[in-house]
Structures are given as structure tokens and as C-alpha cells.
Amino acid sequence: MDPHLQEPSNAGEPLPLASDPISLLRVVVGYDPADRQNIIAVADLLASEFCSELLIVNALSPVPSMLGVVGQTPESISARMEELRASLETDLRRRGVTVPFKVLVDRDSPANALVTTTRKYKADLLLVGTHGRYGLDQFLLGSVSQSVVGRVDCPVLVLGPQFEPRSNLFQTILFASDLDSTGRASAQYAAQLAVRFCGDLLLLHVISEKPHAEGRMREWVEDNQTRKLNALVAPEVLGECNHRALIAYGKPAQEILAAADLRRADLIVLGARKPHLMDDHASWSVLTEVLRNARCPVLIVSS
Image (cartoon, rainbow, N blue to C red; front, top):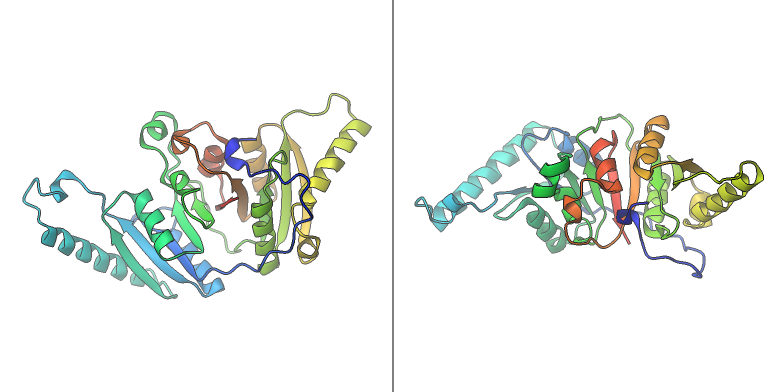
């Protein structure tokens, strides 16, 4: 699997302990007024479920006209930011946001504004959209959603360009793991969400090639991988939700997306490692392909 989906190996460690129920007191939301993915509707649903406060962030990136080149002053810049904040607040109320929210306008790049706000308020979740750039565009411009992963201490929920709103919120959760490096933190998070929403948990591992020998050899391989998948989650947590382990063969991104479509997953959960330089510019990675093509939200949980 792709290195984006890796977490440190836990070979030799004791069985996982049950993690605490998920609490989302503060949710940071990256907001673009165009909002093609209707991210505000998803944020409102989540906040209603978890009694969260929404921190809506919009970035006003510094440009020469804002730095005094064309007569701009600090006062005029501040006035422009306040005007934008008030406009966004009016827009959100018009959209019918029902939970407590606060609008923050930051004079920085979108990624830095989101990371700074998430850290400052010790947010429990960061919710962002992604344009799903391809090839040269992504290599040159990068991805805001991927650049924040690993820079914040909370999970990142991403709505991609293919996102299709659904009436069910996380009723079927697909967790995918590279078993060479486990994914215990993300597996525990996925399981706790399944318990919270009384949903179904699907645990997926993708093997690049089928065993050369069919029959008993393939059965042994799949049984072994299934045991490893189930071992990522505390038994008492698995006992509280419907769960099933899935073994697939092929390219990881394609199989994750195929499983999500076939099972009508409402959420894909992936683990993430500490990012490397230019990760957010890599259009060929498994994470990039999943974010670009998933019809449901993708939750990225750092180790």
C-alpha cells in the first residue's frame, strides 16, 4: 500500500485496549463561499450529532495589493477582513446552520490558516474540501487537504470533488489498512464511529497479488490477514458493532474505491504517517487517488 497509509508497526505489543468514545467539541471547517461539496451541510450534521462548536475558517491570502503596493494600509486590510467575516456569517445563517459557530478570517495561505486555527483552539476534527487536482496542477499547486495531514493533532475529514451527499451519516464505515504497518489508531477511531452511529464496520486489506497456489494456500493467507485486521480493534469494541473483514487483490486505491462503491460506504477511514516534503504535490499516491474519486467523505487519522 501507499506510504501515506502507514503507521508504526505494533508487532509484539499487547492487544489493543478499548479507546474512549469520540468527542468532537470543536470542529474547524475550511470554507469557500462557492462550497461545491456543500461542506457546511456536513459540518452542521456532525456538529448537531456531537454538540460541537464550528470554527469556520476563510483565508485571505496575502497579495501585493494587500501589502501596501497599491495604497493599502493595515486599517483598510483589517476593514476588508471584517467585511468578509460579516458577509460569510450572513451567508452561513442564510444556509440555515443550526449549531453554534464562529467565523474566522485569516490573512494567510489556506493550509496555514487551517493548521493555525486547529492548533490554537485544540480542535477535535478538521473538515476540508479538495479540488482533486491532477498531474501538473497538483505538482505545481499542491493539495490543501493533504498538506494539513500530519500538521494537526486531530483527524482530517475530506470531501472530494466526487462527493455525493447522503441521508445516512456514517452508517457504513470502510476502514482500509496496510497490515505491514497496521493502522491501529485509525482502526480504533473507525470502530468507535461505528459504535456511535450503530453502523456497520468493514475492515479492508488489499493484497497486490493473489497467492500462486489457489485453494488451501489462498485460504490460509486470507485467514491470516483477517485475524490481523480484527486484532487492530479491541474485542469489546468490535462486539458493540456489526463488523466484517474484507480481503481484496489488486491496486490499493482502486480496490478501496471499488469496495466503498459496492458496499455503499458512507465513510472511508485511512491511517496516515508523518508527511514528507512534497507529499501534497504527489498526484500518483493512493491517498490522492482515493480523495479524488471517493463518493463519500474520507477520514484521515494520524498515528
